Image 1: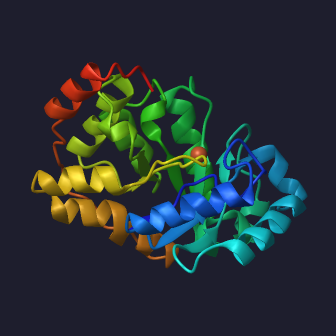
Image 2 (image 1 turned 180 degrees about the horizontal axis):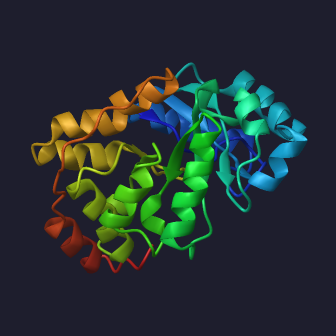
Length: 254
Ligand SMILES: [Fe+2]
């Protein structure tokens, strides 16, 4: 499996704090079948004009020296569009997923659907492919809204753990999956135990093994290799057993 969204570059954002913590998580991911991880530290669009922060390069050098052979490490950023994406991101491949045309972007939670569409079209006008991180996080997210967002050429990264959540955000994520509007899953690991294995397994157990492979492996690989992703067939992720288990264990809203 290939996980394209993580905060495992040590001590540069709210993710892993130390090299040792990052290495522990990488080993854990490898044990769960993850072969490739993209490191996507938070960055504001307004910060990109200054180039890739030197401390990220330094953190990458230290992590690379200590990291296990697998998962292979790739670099990018998760860019918060606090302003329209600066053109420097189109010139400098280091901001994009493994230097491809794909750029991982996010928005403030309360953004309006129309503002998302405009910002995504602006990214596409720069010749890039916006990959929207966790679209289900936005209250304006619905299958209708995401269908319009996708007309810009944008692709959708559903959150692997939210897909298994019984709460409203999980319902929004599953509604996208049920409408065939998700392109990849990623764990958004912040130095913890989140992987994409659980949702891959849940889909596979429900007979959606082909869709699971597309979401967790084939489409992420297409992005790494700068190829077009393939549409994923609509799939209903049933949650009744998980929901009961979560209630039993007293889990709260994510
Ligand atoms: Fe993230």
